[in-house]
Image 1 (cartoon, rainbow, N blue to C red):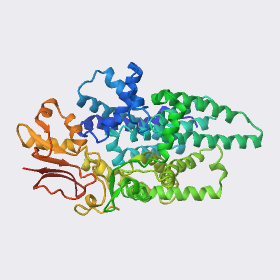
Image 2: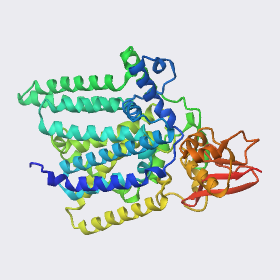
Image 3: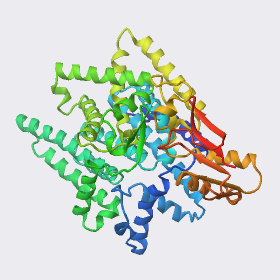
Image 4: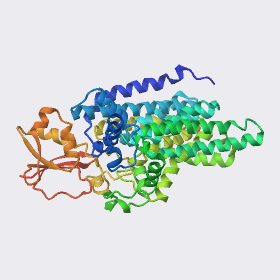
Length: 510
């Protein structure tokens, strides 16, 4: 069936509505703990490209590519942004815009798989109204752009295999190379696509039809992949094979984080985080109906696969759901098997969420064809409404969302889990002090969020805030990261509470 612009109109309307909301609220989000660190690879890469500086190779690296950070730095240099408040505000809106492009791409993918504008629009809303992802789409220029790139690759993958022609695989390779240029986990795509082309090769060989085409597609995919990966990651330009191998090994065995997490009421060192960390976090931070639909979709897909496996292996629309299952389970199992350290809820694995939604939509699509259709429509509508309401209520702290499976009694979340771990709420804490106290205000607090969010204030407010050692400070601001206990300071001047738990505290020292 030929697609028309009318088929994609609902997604475009939703995109414009989401963009309008984003333009209205993007200045409400503070500057996260890691944002200056996230920006560094882009700065180093830009300086290497334009001035030949070697900081890219001499300074420590976390083995993430500059595929997204380099364009962000290029933008700020082209706009001649010198004030860091402007720099980070522009970064926030561009990062969010890229996320919305990914959400629209997900609409396209869902429509092409289900041939239903209603299901495609539902998929759009399920992804957009993921509270934690939504907040991170402004200040997390590492995990969210990778999620977006992952969606775009999945959409192009469906298109390339459906068209079953050689040239679309070049675009697919370019997109997959770009994803890997953001985070090296994008290397999963050559493995997945290679496996599908291998199946097509052997099935074509058995049928004695077009034996050479899968091999040609693989070659053109690898050309596009390699060219874009090399372009998007200047760190590879000097000794590409060695540097890529180092990055791959670091990904598999990453356990160098020296911090600790609060998990189920215990402060656990980063190297000792249990394998249950992701399953628990995913279960308590995903809207309940989507969580249930994803589980049902996985079970339904397994049942259909064992009933008639051939359509789910060969080049058919059904194979995309097997691919979705791989995109969800393979990274999770890799983290467990290789004991890779993930922390800060499950942000390192946010990119598996669209695949989970797709599996949930697999179940929704089946149920809409049954006598349960009215109940499913009502259930999905209620969940969308509840989630939208919760996101408005939590604003601008949607990153602290928990579903009904978590204990919401007073301070229960604070005592059991990491909450506002990136310290974006320091923005609201500083604004509170500025509004209440005249003149200069001497503050101290967590090492990175405090200077980051002072940097995000207006020039006039910036002059009034003085970051000083604790012995000279009048106020201490904290997001309780790695310190869930109450601090032994005289007075809690102000606490920002979300879901009944304190996420930011301002202590009056003297």
